[in-house]
Amino acid sequence: MPITVGKVVEGRVTGITNFGAFVQLPQGESGLVHISEISDDYVEKVADYLKKDQKVKVKVLSISEDGKISLSIRQVKPKTNNPIEIDWNKTDEKQKHMSFEDKLSKFLKDSNEKQDQLKMREGRRGFGQRYRGRSMDL
Image 1 (tube, helix red, strand yellow):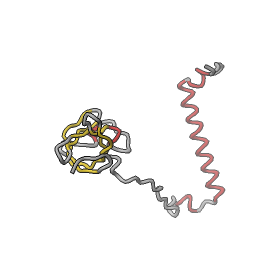
Image 2 (cartoon, rainbow, N blue to C red; image 1 turned 45 degrees about the vertical axis):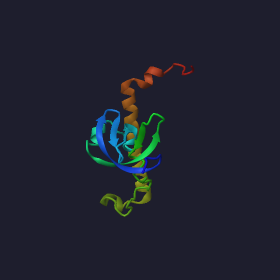
Image 3 (cartoon, rainbow, N blue to C red; image 1 turned 135 degrees about the vertical axis):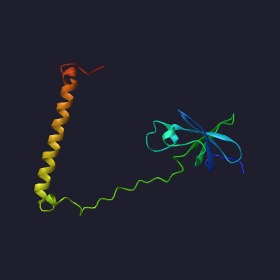
Image 4 (cartoon, one colour; image 1 turned 120 degrees about the horizontal axis):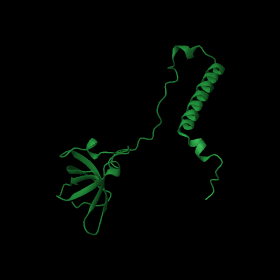
C-alpha cells in the first residue's frame, strides 16, 4: 500500500535533530516531522517530546518531486477546543457570604493593584520615559 498525502500511518522515530525528527514509515520510506509539527505546544527541544525508536502516528503532509516526505504528529491528534469547565459552586469560604457588590468591589480593587504594579515595573525599566516627547511617526 503506497504512502499518499493525507494518510495517517504508524512509524518509528529513527533520528532526532534540533529541527525535527526522522520517522521510518511502514514500507521502508523515511520522512521528516518538522519541529513545528510535533505538538500544538511550543517545542524548544525535540528530545523533550520524542525518543529514538518510539512508535508514533503521523499524517503525511506532502511528498516532494524528489521523494522527500513531510510528516505531522500534531495533526493526528484530535483538536480539543472545548472550554474549561468551571465549578461555580466551588468558592473560598470568605466569598460564599459576600454579596455580588462586595465581590465586584474586591475584584476592581485587586485589578487596580495589579495595574499599578505593572505601571511601576514599566516605569523602572524607563520605558515610559524613553519615548515621552518623541514623535512615533516614521
